[in-house]
Amino acid sequence: MAGYSEDLRVKVVEFLKKGHTIKETAETFGVSMKSVSIWKKMDKEGKRLVFEFVPRSPHRINHAGV
Image (cartoon, rainbow, N blue to C red; front, side):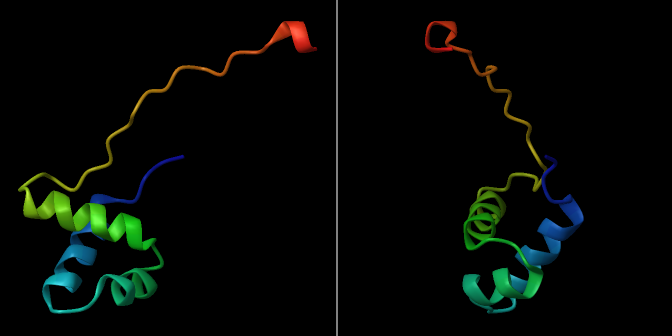
């Protein structure tokens, strides 16, 4: 699953900077409040608002229980 585009993230943060609440912003753009909070924090810290893939280890199958 891909993350949201950097363009959308920038628009969300700009909307927040205009004085809108996190809840209002999330509802307006159709994203979660958690995402809005993360992007707000990233912007405050001066980080680029880009999607960062976090590699995960594959699931292991327990053959003993099969």
